[in-house]
Image (cartoon, rainbow over all chains, first blue to last red; front, top):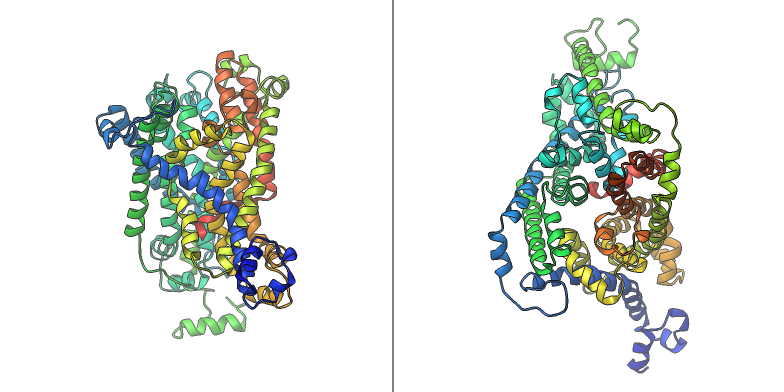
Amino acid sequence: MPTRRLVLAFFLPPSLTPDAVKYDRRYRALDKYRFVAWFTLLPLAFYLLLVAWPFVQAFYYSMTDWSGYGTEFNFIGIDNYVRLWNDSQFWEATRNSLFLLVFAPVITLALGLFFAYMLNAGGRHRRNETVSGVFGSKFYKIVYFFPQVLSVAIIAVIWARAFSPRSGVVNPLLENVGLGALTQNDWLGKYGLWVTLLVLCWSFVGFYVVLFSASMGSIPKEIYEASLLDGANRSTTFFRITFPLTWDAIRTGWIYMGIQALDAFAIVSIMIPRQGIDVLPTFLYLKAFRDGQAAYATAVGVVLFVITLTFALLMMRVGRRDRIEF
Amino acid sequence: MSTTDTADRAEDGELRPERPGPAEPRPSGGRVTEEGGVLNVFAHSFLVLWTVMAAAPLLWIAVSAFKTSAEVLSDPFGFPSGLHWANFANAWAEANIGRYALNSLIILSGSLTGTMLLGSMAAYVIARYTFRGNRALHLLFIGGLMFPIFLALVPLFFMLQNLGLLNTRPGLILVYIAYSLPFTIFFLTAFFRTLPSGVHEAAIVDGASHTRTFWQIMMPMAKPGLISIGIFNFLGQWNQFVLPRVLNVGSRDDYVLPQGLAALMVQMGYEGDWGALYAGLTIAMLPVLVVYVTFQRQVQAGLTAGALK
């Protein structure tokens, strides 16, 4: 059997493969590799062309002076990064993004953990249960999860309207509860960063309640029983048992929330008026698609990538501990 | 506690041999119950508070959708004087909500099918076949999860422009598929690996081809995983904002739903017709929420699936 025919068979579907080839002792291997190659070809092509290649290009473009119009540009080394270093707008956007990166995960995860623990162990003790969820915990989880299924664009529009000084609800609400002194004429312009933080946390708390609930639900009841027999109260139970045993989920959640906080593109670009704050993604967007500074914008992208990577690696190192199997 | 049955007493006896008499059902049960009661009230008040926090903004939008524009401005907090259905008609006809939703549906029908098909094909091969470069291939796909999408936006924009795919539906579909692949493959590879290998081997022994094994044996077995990741991708692509914001900026008639709503807010800001905006938001929210509440268990599982793996 000439090898040429085997090679040819590689490009034929099994039904069209000549019998002579099928009886070759090398056909089994060929059949397998043919399948592997054909099945990975299309996904790989999509991925390489539309995901991997743009990422690689981005690093190169960030070292050119390309405007985005036309095809002519020069290699200028690290000039874009030097320019970023001296760009106060860039530093402000970075500060805002880092602010969100620090506070959004802390607040969201703390609230998520609190509510999840309340749902799973906050209930009245019944006779034969050591820990019991509160009544209606399923209902709470359904409602808390609402923001997660809505588009972030819808969420941003809703909150932009809620914080509107004249036709929104935040100002009247403050007046109704006797905090009229706190009302603002320009929430989104003056306190854009805080409102962004609020909206980010608001939309993700439900996700973490569900996530942590699942994680807490998988902790065996015997562990709770044992601690109760030893006289542990609820806060001890939480810090000594629930928290360590959900740590894996918390750490993963922390990284995920950090990445979400570094995004915030839709919230800021829809909700915040133009004279308000920028975060790194919105700054990048404006540089690339408004100011015609494509190369400069990709340099911002590289910075964003470095921050994301540093954050993720840091969290993975800091939070590592022996996995507890149960 | 005279009604304690034998099993209970045996347990109690084991725990506190020094007190053989009538005992409480569990050690220091009274104290725990009391604490439980206090905590229960405390827990419930916070839980109810967040329920209001989570649902009130959405309810406010839905209620305000029935107000006249004058009512929106004069009394944003109150109830509408009557059911002002005209807002919904305006949102549907003039503000094009129906058209945006249709655009989203058309794009999703292509992108979701493509994502699931290509994702499961690659994941299956990576999970179940040993070949040179298997690990490298897996890492290559998963590596895409580490990069923020913003890094690729500029090159991607100009690549689509050069290919003539900018501001077109096929372009958006292809991009959606490509950017959904890393997570889909990550998730499904883990899922295919958990499936028993016996059935697969039996099919091969019986002479089924690799393709046939995939379609008729492995895909049906992977159904729970496919549903989870399918929901995840559906909501992710349906709600996608960044990609269309950059890659679909041609005619306003081609906007997808999230884009359309964002544009509608700007437009209604000029026209002062907030009622129509609220109606548009309600129309956009309602189907998603209804589907979510109906399938809430699957949806919650689907969206949190990635973080649990």
